[in-house]
Amino acid sequence: MRERLFIADLIFVVFLIVPGGALSQTTQPSATLTVNGHSGEAPVIQAGGRSYVDVETLARITNGSIRFNGNQILLTLPAPARGARMTVPPTRQAGAAPAAPATPAGFSKGFLKAGIEAMAEIREWRSALESAVQYGFPPGDNWINRYSGAAATAISHASAAASTDDDRQGFQLLHNEFNNMQSLSNQMLSRRKSMNYIPPNALQNDPIDQKILACARALGEMAAAGQFQDAAACH
Image (tube, rainbow, N blue to C red; front, side):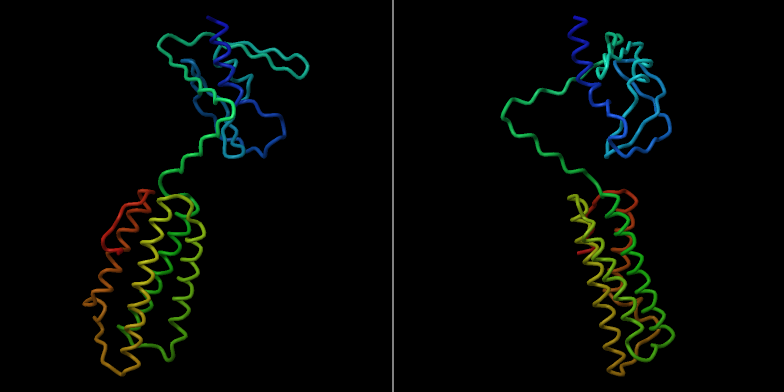
């Protein structure tokens, strides 16, 4: 029985052994590690997107033993503590194709950062347009191109950063917000060029602007939650 437990434990531990210097390592603060019902503090090393702990530390926490024989590491773990559960990953049959990795749920960090930056650029664009409506448009159209161009660049960065299903669905709503802002901007500039009177509170009564504000609130809630949530205001 002890040999079976040792084999199962060794399968689990082998993923924790990394040759020295093989990966770029970043040591994180100590974390509580629980193995077979035994718990203890252990420094965690982040490398290649995975977490590793030192085998000597593992042996200490589990009250196991470790021996070094040349280039061999012999690690023996005790039987699991009463009530502990030990899970061994199933062995893949020879010739079977490896399972495709599951797509992470929620927004990726890269897309979330790029999406927030794009939302900020759209907000700056709207603020500039709102000021122009309230206090008078500057001469020419170059002033608005600076804001619309910055927003377009930020949108392209968000598109490139999208990697998960939530990212792609969230980007579609973000792109809709950009398109609505472009429509509102073009509408106001067209009215100005036609010499039509634009009241200072024109944006407050504009349905497109109201949709932009509602979508911005929905996108902000999504960013805070870190995952996609459909929003009618962004369609």
